[in-house]
Image (cartoon, rainbow, N blue to C red; front, side, top):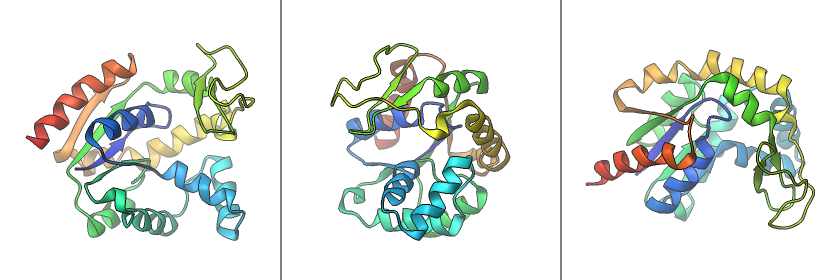
Length: 207
């Protein structure tokens, strides 16, 4: 099963993707994770991607498409995948249509005010990558590996607002592009409440 998750940054796509990945045994492909891995390489491309991410902009389509296309070749994608953060523009969606067929598109819907509150409180562990919310996790240390938690540059309020503006301008039109394959779910409650109707829907597609 090949799935696309649509939704603004901080809407809960990543959390939803992990639940789908576990239950349906397909990998979550996050362009954010792919980009951060490239940044760590400290190559010319890595420095270019780092500058764009820190400003809240979008990595150029041709770069993003090649990175994602290469990921599809890995063995764990044989039975499908979950795309989290790609495509972000109609041009990327059109390019993706030429690479592979998509079975379903899930739109994770959440008000921008709530997103800004959630993302501003997000803390990341630089050691193991675990993510915490300062809204309900008061320690500054990771409970998995003990590293000191950090606030990523792209989780700061001014960058978040820019990211949401970019999303609304470039990504929201994808809702129309995928209208015939779109399943919409609200993420304003708990992750479990968000996932329950999605699981039922995906199980019906498999049947």
